[in-house]
Amino acid sequence: MKFDNPRIWLWIAAGIVVINGFFPAVWILLTSFKTEGELTRIPITWLPDRPTLQNYVQAFTSAPIGRYFFNSLVVAIGATLLCVLVSALAAYALARLRIPYKTLIFSLLVGVSMFPTVTLLLPLFEMVLALGLRNNYIALILPHAALSIPVATLVLVSFFQSIPKDLESAAMVDGCSRLGALWRIVVPLSAPGVFTASILAFVNSWDEFLLALTLLPSQAMRTLPVGINFLQGEFSFPWPLISAALVVALVPLALVIAIFQERVVGGLTQGGVKG
Image 1 (cartoon, rainbow, N blue to C red):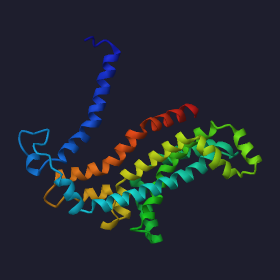
Image 2 (cartoon, rainbow, N blue to C red):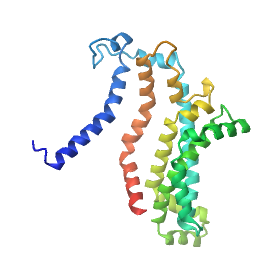
Image 3 (cartoon, rainbow, N blue to C red):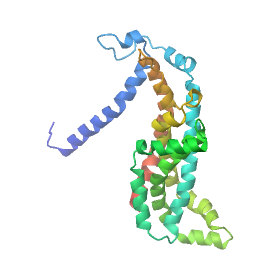
Image 4 (cartoon, helix red, strand yellow):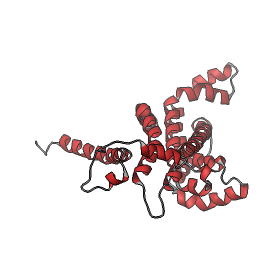
C-alpha cells in the first residue's frame, strides 16, 4: 500500500468520519438490548448475549416516552410550518422586491443565526412569563421557528432568485396576486429548497434541549430530549433504559435523513451554487 497516494488518505479520513459518526449510534442500539448486569460485565461484551425488549417496554411504562414523543412531534411540526411560512415570505421579499440595505439585512440574518441559544434564554423566559404561555406548546414553537428562520431564509433566497420573473408576471396577468404567484409558482418550483429548509427546521426543533427544559417544565409537556434526561435517578444511571429511549428519539430523524438525504444535500448544493 502506497501512503503517498492522496486517495489513500482520503479513504482513511472518510473511514474515521464514518466510525466517529456511526459507532456511538450502534453502541446505543446494542446497549438498548442488554441488561444492567451484562452492561457492567468485565471484560466488555459488544453484542448482547440474550437480546431483550424489556428496556423498550419499561421506557413506555415506567416513563411516559409516548407522551414525550408526541410533545416533540407537535413542537417540531409546528415550528417547521411556521418557519417555512415566514421564511418563504421573507425570502421572496429579498429576492424580488426593491428593498434598501439588502446587504445589511443579509449580514444581520447571518449574524443572528450565530447567536447561541443560552444568550436568548433569559429574555425569552421573561417574555413567555409575561404572555402567560409557560407550559404551552406555543412557548416553544415560536422560539424554535425564530431560531431556524435566518438559515431557512438564506436557503430559500437563492432558490427564489433562480426562478424566472416572467412566470410570475404571466400568472399575475391571468389574475393571480403576488402572494398567489409566490405560493402557486415560486414555491413549487423551489421545492428542493423548501424541503431543505423544512428538514433543517425540524431537526433543530426536535433536538433542542435548553429552551424545552426551561419553557415547558411540566412533566406532561416535556419533549423527548428533556424527558430522557430525567430518566436517570439520583444514585443510578440506567444506561439500557436510557439507550432504549434514545433509540426511540433517533429513529424518526434517522428515517427522515435516510429517505431524503439526496434531496437535502442536493438542495443545499443547488442553493449554494445558485446564490
